[in-house]
Length: 233
Image (cartoon, rainbow, N blue to C red):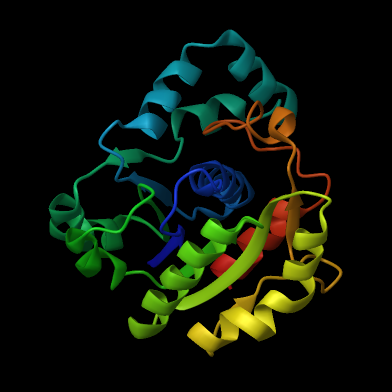
């Protein structure tokens, strides 16, 4: 079992959205291969689990899935990847059971680091850290990367919610060498299909409105594919 996470110390940078996209995409592309996927939501509001319940009641969601997979959408629907709402102790207690049943487990954390998280973090195989080109977001991201380095977790970063600003261009050009490698000498720069830094434009009308735990995102720009490739390889 590989344990994966898209995580940082700060909320509002797209962690949960990207986690849902990656889990949903991996579920569908590995469906015929028999690989089992699970998602663990540590948010006490159970936001992702609640989203799944709402989606299952929407006719439009089922119709969208049927349009993409007309031959086996019912089978996919009946065997969707589970979403567990665990506390940290519950996850640690059930980890061996998860290892027996799943090939990949995604962990979705709240936008803060708590003491109780540390033992959970030590179980992670790979982390992707979303960076937004804002001073506070970068500081919190660097702090998280440093923690991952100390815990010997393989970590990469990508730029999320990219905006067309001079500061964004500076981050894309210089942040990896000038900042991030200094706090984590093993940090990866997650790449897109062209070998450049994965940089996902700020398009809330696209990314938020198409976020689904059931229907895979229409990944025309191959952004989610690139992120998923880093995580599972």
